[in-house]
Image 1 (spheres, rainbow, N blue to C red):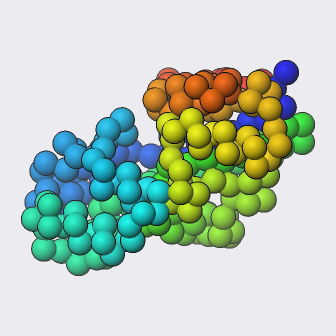
Image 2: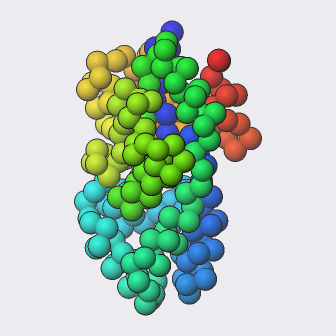
Length: 203
């Protein structure tokens, strides 16, 4: 019996579109950007940024050097954040409904630039600066120090919250992350592009 649900953020709750960031960087002159950053594969620079190992300033500097871009930090951030779209209220309402009968958690691979932009979306759309009211606990990789698909990340979440893997469902739109959760003995669902959380969880 499932008693706990861990949700991914981007592509599950928050709508995202990587093509928008590719196009934004291409307009700035970085046509090779998709080769080093995608939903399924990225270089160690991005991994380090996602676990808080390097600062936003270092990340910007190194990537601008690598892409040979002479742009401001604001221009960089605008392109980097272009993939972040909207957060449908119907999904938040659904989480609120689920929370009445389950413990619910959020686990997102993200970075400080995206996270600040996401919190701005929360503020602009709903007048709140985080999703804390909807979840028992939020785990953002850049502050957690662990990222998916590392099975140890899931084990820490399970241990910290005194929950059982066999009673915990993880939902993510990236197959590698689902496999990482399964290695930690959680039940997991790969949310494909043709489905939403409404299709995989009974109301």
